Image (cartoon, rainbow, N blue to C red; front, side, top):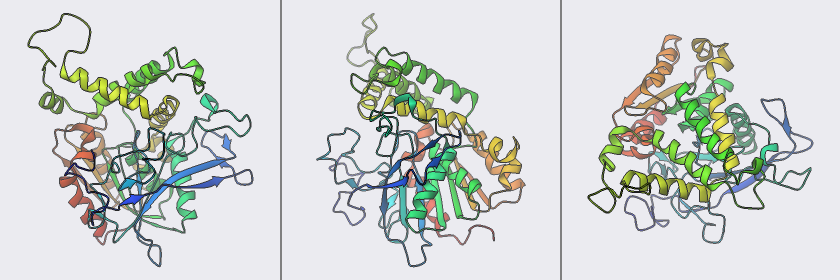
Length: 400
């Protein structure tokens, strides 16, 4: 993606939110600490967030967008600080959902006030393992407390309260963001009118847990990891790159990988009979791993994947019974799966939709055909966008 790519709107386009600047706010202090699900607390929490559009007079048009594992608050537009900020994660590209969010787009910022915040523990501006511990003056590293999806939602609630929003028109997210959206509908049933869960289910499968475990193993056994205290030296880039390569395979699909790469060799019709990068798919994954390691913090990867592991809506809200948990939900809910997603499969998403239907909650479930696997919620905008737009504009809303 760049400013010459015709798929994306330039900053001066009437369909772009234009140049945007992230904002920061302190949402916890010594007098008002943030208590985590684990029972520990943080005396200082700063949150980075972006907003687009304007909040209307009665604050009824707010949409909260929740980002996925490697996402951030930069949903749409162009980061005004990217050229001046040396931190590599400052994106010189449009926001990760720029095709969806903006004036006249499917989430229309002429109509809605859109908010997205970076989650606690990530490395894109909100307090995280790389932040300085006020007690020591050094980065937290693994002394940072373990965080959960539930913690992220509670912190988001503090943010929207700070912004003067008492009730959300919609909360929407894909993948790990979709689990946050679901948690919003469960934790704050009277504050959410609409909930959109994309490519996500109430919990990660055992296979998903396994992939995360292997990724963390690679990071924590990189010699540069040094028990998470690597901030004064070289980061564990090899372990993080390997973790990303493994995870990236789960975001794609067999069909999509065959279509894009097949078994093509990079530069010869014959194998080199060695262990270097020979196949196109190897080159692609190597690039994904190396580029990710340049912009993401390995400790943050550990914390976010562990939060992903722990989330189980049925266990938290229904004592293991998903139906009991879903009875809490008052928001009109749309659940969307994608046919080739094998991280959060159509069967898992369909179970959520069917359970909501069984307990009498207003729900729409769709399984969309796509060769792009789990990443389809980021790619299939022409198909997904009209569905989201119509759902936002419908007269469906939270039950009274």
